[in-house]
Structure formats: C-alpha cells, structure tokens
Image (cartoon, rainbow, N blue to C red; front, top):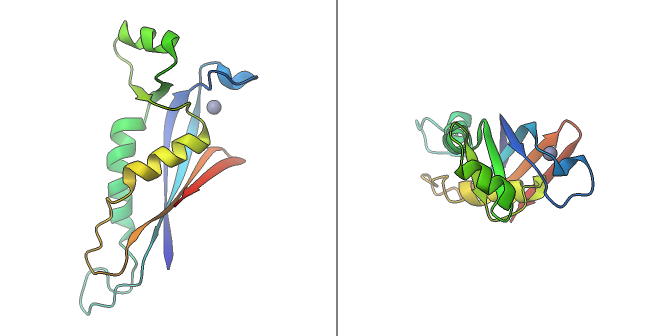
Length: 146
Ligand SMILES: [Zn+2]
C-alpha cells in the first residue's frame, strides 16, 4: 500500500546552460508528492493501526528538511561561479549550493536521497520511501523512484 503527502514551498533557481528563459534567475512554487510504501500496521491498539504511516509523521519528516533548507532559498549549482561569487559577497539570502544543475529531475532525486532512510520501520511492515514527484509548474513534474 502506498500513501502520499503533498508539501509545497517557494524556491528560486536557474538552469545555467538552458537555451531559453530558464537560464535567468527565477522562482517557482514547488510541490512535492512524497510517497511512502509499506504494509498496513495491524498491531492492536497502536496509534497507527490501519495505516501505512501517520500522514503527520510524513509531513513532519519532509518539512523538517524542506522548511529549513529549501523554503525561500535559492538553489545554485556549485559550477555556477557567477552566483556562487554573488552569494559569497552578500548576506540575507538563503543559497542552497548543490552539485547538480537544479532541474526538476535533479531536485526530485535530491529530495528522495535526502529523505530516504528517514522513515523508521517501527512495526516491521517494510515501510520505506517509495517515490518523490516534484512539480515545478502546474503542468510539469519529474518523478524519482528507486
Ligand atoms: Zn525554473
């Protein structure tokens, strides 16, 4: 069984080598669909009885990373020397320096790898992160799954 929690945040980026408008600085209202998979908890009297995982737990684990590290940040490829110089010489910004060009595909993989293993399989139901679907615009998304 799979369950999905949706998390949204605001973040800037640019895709440095892109042929069109994406190479300029801009931002998106990103949306991630965090899918967690496992058997339903059958332990009698457990808070999670009848659930794969409490939606609130998925939200808290995902938000701990997304609110603190990504929300109102600006994602920068570490090869983007122009922006790295800018962030090194200014304050008041929230750069997220990453070793990849920040496309929807790479951000989906990055979020997956960051959240992977954070979901504790406390009832031995095989609980694990299943996929991250990352919406960059209302009509465009990338999905990363192992
Ligand atoms: Zn963009």
